[in-house]
Image (cartoon, rainbow, N blue to C red; front, side):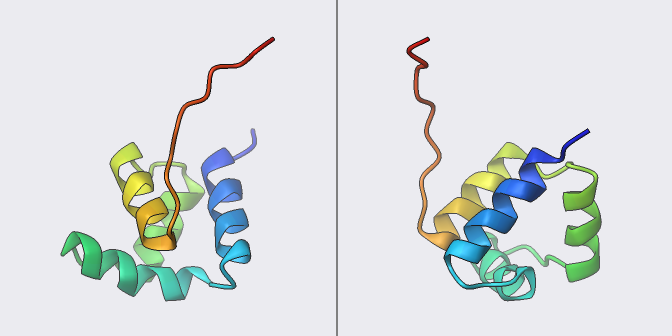
Length: 72
């Protein structure tokens, strides 16, 4: 099964010329939580990143998450 969270995050990081190791300190600073690299990588691999965390990640990277109604 495809891990859409991991795939999307990798795409966003590529767009911003960043790596996960660059994201972790920014995410920790924003949320005031201590994110460990290894733990984050494992959670990402298991697709157990929460929606709230994805909102914070998107914000740190300068993106918004929005739902768009399909037209089909």
